Amino acid sequence: MKGVLNAEEIGVLINWLPNFSRLVEDVVTLYMWACTRGSEILEMEVSELTREKDGMWWTIPKLKTKNSWRDGATDLRVPLVGRAAAIVQRRMQAIETGYIFSSTGRSGHVEQKTISAMVWMHQPYSNTRPEYERARLPVSHWSVHDLRRTGRTQLTALGCDTNIAEAVIGHMPSGIEAVYNLHRYDCEQRHWLQELAENYEQLANTQRMI
Image 1: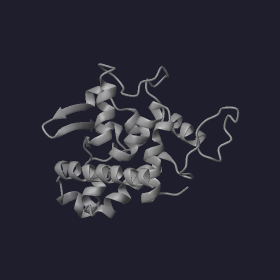
Image 2: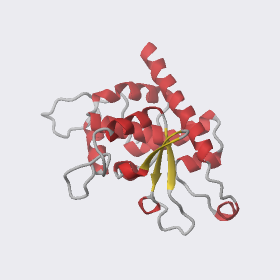
Image 3: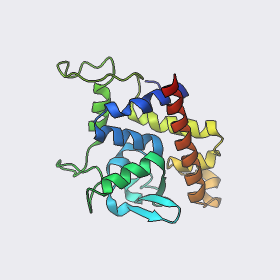
Image 4: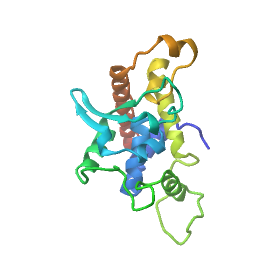
């Protein structure tokens, strides 16, 4: 696997996203625009979403985060901008309560493995269901989790401070930093996710012009 996508690959992939089903397109887009974990995305609930003065916010309960076992962990606040906000608002129009990505399965929501399997099916080398004709990805050898790494890498490339970038992807500080720096970076996260969203749109536009 690649680990991260480069700028050209990001632009190509964004333009190709509509070839996925709407479900997969929405989830993959949220990986890119929100930089959160797949389990958090797919367990998103209407009750966790709020419209505030500066825009849409998604507050992930501590128990749903990877840091749930850590004493100093709190709920994870995620600003939703650009395509991420548009996806959430569209899906909220169809449901009043419950999971944004609901399913009739046991958990009540779409499983992460389902999204991973659908992405795999579109890879150019996938032999899963060979009788099923589908568009093949022009960017290969990546998993959905690589998109989170890609977002983190792009934030650094754009000049985002390490502490803010780590907060964006939900990583907690360690050591003395965790004890003395209790700032939540809400405003900063919104600013840099907006910068990331604009960067993604520019990369997509560049590839359309080639």
